[in-house]
Length: 316
Image: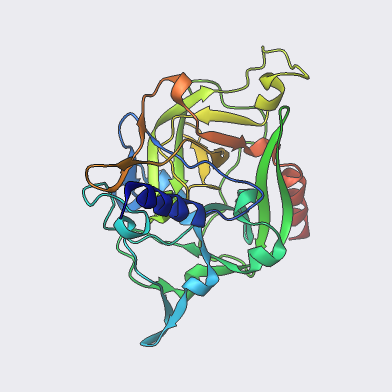
C-alpha cells in the first residue's frame, strides 16, 4: 500500500471515532513524560475511588449478550495496534479499545459529558455508558451498563467570543454503589494548579493521568473584553494533560481539592505517522505553555447545572 493510501486509511480511522458531524474535534497528545496510569496502579486511593464514577460511552450495538453467561456482555476485542494502527511497541498497543467518549456522575442518575459526543436524544439513546472498563476486562457486567433516558442540558458552540461543549444526560436508572463526583461551585482554577484527568484515552481501558497543571486560564485581574480571546477564555482553561480522543467528556480534577474543575473537550493531534515502520506513534510536545492545546470546559460554566442538581436534591 502506498504512503498516501496509508495516510488516508489512518485519517479515516481517526474520523470514524468522531461522534458529531457538527463539531470536528481535534484529538489530544502527550506532554513531556507519559503520565497515564492504570486505575489499579495509581498511588492515590482518592482518585482510584473517583474512577468508579467515570464511565465510557460505547455504541450499543458493539455490546452483545454472552451466550455462556446471561449476566455478561461481550464485545469485539480489537487491540489498539489494529484499531488505531499503533506501532506494536507503543504503550498500551496490545489493549482492547472500546469507548469513544467519557463521562462522569454528578447525581444518582445524571451524567456529564461533552456535547460533541452526543448529537441529539436519538443519538444519545443509541449509546451505552459502561462503568469499570479497566485493564484486563474481557467481558462486561450487564449491571455496569446504562442507557440514556433523556438529554437534560446541552450546548455546543464555538466562536470568537465563546466556547460551549457540554451535555448533561439522565441515565435509564439510578447508579448503585457509585458516588457522584464533587464539583467546583464558584471561581476558577489558577494558573499552576495541579490537575488530574480520568477517562478512556483512544478508547482504551480507563486511565488516570496526572503530572499536569493549568497553563492558560482566566485570571480575575484581567479585563473582560468584548473582542479578542479574554472574553472567550472565561469558559475554559488549558492544561498539559496527556489526553486523547476518547477522553472527551472526561472529568478534570483539582489535585489538591479533589473537586472537578471541568471536562475535557479539545486538544492537539494524538498520533504521528512513522514512515519507516508504517504505523502511528504518540505525538509528543513540551510542557511549555505555548505548546499546550488541551482545552477543559469549566464546570461552573455548564449553564443550568447547579439549578438542576438543586432541584433533584429538593425532590428527594
